Image (cartoon, rainbow, N blue to C red; front, side, top):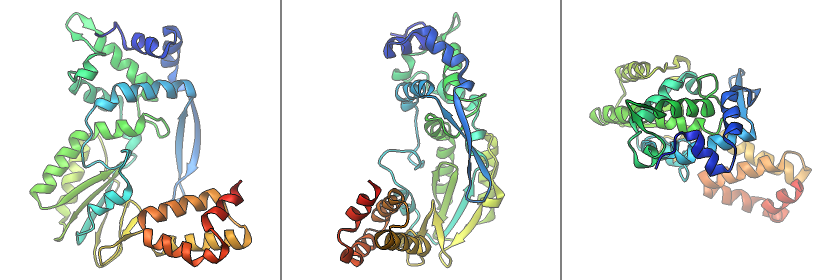
Length: 316
């Protein structure tokens, strides 16, 4: 049974005063710590990190509302149990790949996107418990406004908010279904990893495919990033979400990263140079993507005792 407002329901569930939660919601834009990090291209990316109070409310919205909104099987980012290797495997047998980047993806997701997807799914049994949209009742409108205040910053998704990843997937559900239908009709394979769209085929991919996706993205309020959109073929190195698919259709981390990992390990165990936690992270990544390479490295440096234990010990 629905309470009079989502605010009342959250207050009851979290054992907090409604006035306290309402204060956070009304002033939510001030509950972020803003800072900048460097992009790989040398530019800067703005991060808006929510306070513990606001983050708690965002998690509640995720677990009780956003969790029940549909996410397509073609979205591979931010999904538990799905790795970038799982994503790359979808394209390993193809000969040609088109990579489309969505420009300023998170920042382009607005309150209208979020409101539309919630309204479309308001009849879902687990969501309907929080909404009652009738002629004489403004509950749906008020609760939508409350969700926007909690999850959005100045009416837009921000990089850093814990609710942003799941919002990005649910609002793209309809687009993903269109994209897959288009792909199937044209003997293509479609996947999306956040703002990275990958379309692959055993046959040459025409420019018209890119144009069709560009037009459809614009219908949803997004823009194609021309500088990061490119065609790749089996004759050259194909990169899928950071992983390399070689000409013989093997998936790996690439020669450059593989050699860098070896160098980091050697410097750490022989000269105690480097960040142990960072190296352990790279090792775990390598073990997931290239288990045979990982085993060879461990064996190669076994003369220096247990490599992983030795690196762990240096971090304590």
